[in-house]
Image (cartoon, rainbow, N blue to C red; front, side):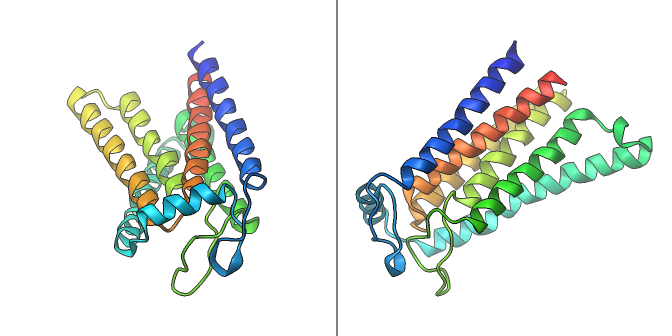
Length: 213
């Protein structure tokens, strides 16, 4: 029953992301971006960007901290590789670790799709270049990977204190990264919202798959 609720929640969030993406390209679209690029929800996005301004130091900090979820992915990858070597069969690797690998590949695929098919461009130039901005790739990475650390900790770690410390770290880090990315001014606010929908939806689908299998 729990896996079905997770599945429905995940599907609902993915549908919300799709609808949000469509709305961004239809509602209040104005050429107010860098080099005259068009932005959906233009009045809201421009207002929010003017309120926060651009803070490149915060952008750099959150950019480097984006290595943390990548490191976590590598750790789980090593865990799966060790199991594969010891058990000598891919089918004998823990199913939740196999599903985690599939899940991470899916997250990367979503990132690549929106690099190839840009929806929005950043409100500021990065080193003189105009870069894609939707959905926020750093936000997508953080909110897709960090919850899996907490989920796996609660599945594999028996020590209650370690579980709680992991949960506190994941929540604090994720909140800092999302807020930091939001107020750094390198994304439109709607880019961050889109990432939240997509990452949350993908994660809930992963949880559902693990609980099912």
